[in-house]
Length: 540
Ligand SMILES: NC(=O)C1=CN([C@@H]2O[C@H](COP(=O)(O)OP(=O)(O)OC[C@H]3O[C@@H](n4cnc5c(N)ncnc54)[C@H](O)[C@@H]3O)[C@@H](O)[C@H]2O)C=CC1
Ligand SMILES: O=C(O)C(=O)COP(=O)(O)O
Image 1 (tube, rainbow, N blue to C red):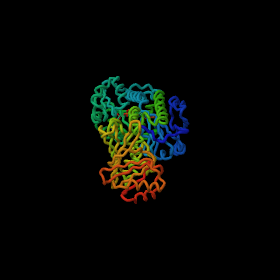
Image 2: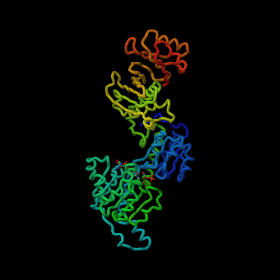
Image 3: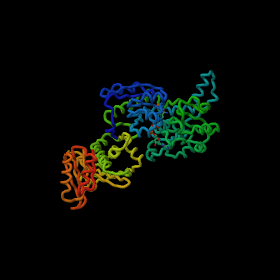
Image 4: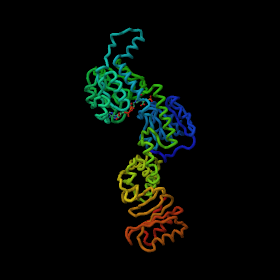
């Protein structure tokens, strides 16, 4: 999504690198000439030290070592972007980042291959006791009896989480002539067939697999995904691999399952608490482990660092990013289609909040005509920005607009129709508060820019800009003249004036564009005129 209106730094941009990143990978930051990027590398800091050091930074770059908590986010008042040079973002408080309008980006593709290769290396090492045998040999013992392993060929591998890494692991396991079963909520039967794997449930994997490897993110739904109940279903002698995240497999339950002899061995690259140097699982001879090395290759590190570096540069130059984590990703071409409507959408929201009384409960946005064919999420975000802009303490931007609206209990509904009733495009926004409903509609006129074309059912033609007076009146002779006279008396110059009514003598509206802001006192003055029902001052 565009972040056009996210307040972007114009001066020096401090980029703080808190975890070890590839120097080759951050070359795009070093070589950037249009932006004034100040790269600060300071790794291994305690949370307290980090809080102090990032008070003035616009960008924070991390891997998995640094936990970016809400507290840290709240100390970094200038923070606009958090970059994760890797995949998993479970070490970043995404809700806090979103709430503060901070965009989070990751590098989802750069370490897939390395993580998959590491998983296969761990599985093979597990099957053949390579670390244990090596250790024995290093200690001067030639022991061939204790380390009889098993082949991978014709064994069944269960892959839980069939995304980038899971699929790459499956591909390689098939090269070792394994049968692969896979579970992923997004795995279709067609894709499974195409990749030569059997689509299965977690339970089917647990009951049938000889090796089980997990490749899901750590989420509330995946925490303890493999637990006591699942171990109980498994074949005796099953082998477990976790190169994804500590916690997906319940560590206590795994420990017990190994002691009971249910699990023949486990290969672990990740732990709930890292560094995990003093872990009970590491005391078991059946467990082999690495210190979170899945992505630790020269190639992966360079690649992920290049990807986040490029996204930082892109963000500060264009307002868009390639790999957003906490906002929808919209391709450039798709974004270009809706970009011209951004200002209009925001102004409609801004207009409505200024005419509405009471707490907003519902926002209904209808996209009609050509615009209905586009990805309108950025337009909804812009409308919300307008709606929240006048009375919301927090800085509202594309990242947090929807979140902030929903947090204060505003229900947001989008409706699309390709018929636009006389306009090529029409965006109609309705706001419902506890007591009132207000509607405004706008369009983009070819070559002439944005126009408000309807207010509460009255047809108007107003440029949504500057100071407006929105007056509801009864359609009686003299009403317009009296308003004009009174404004003149107050030295308020009328630039343009639109009037609308539904029937002669019925209710009517006036929309005046005035050259200066109208004070409360002047409003009262106008509202006391004969046949004037309501007067609102609006600044767009
Ligand atoms: N050890 C290491 O150094 C590394 C670890 N990782 C970990 O591996 C994870 C996966 O990475 P990628 O494959 O690149 O991510 P991905 O996003 O391509 O794949 C994750 C898959 O998990 C699936 N999933 C989500 N919830 C699930 C559930 N409840 N049950 C089953 N499947 C579910 C998703 O549908 C998705 O297909 C990362 O989130 C990260 O935590 C990634 C890279 C390196
Ligand atoms: O990309 C991931 O999710 C990883 O776990 C890699 O972690 P790291 O960047 O090596 O600390």
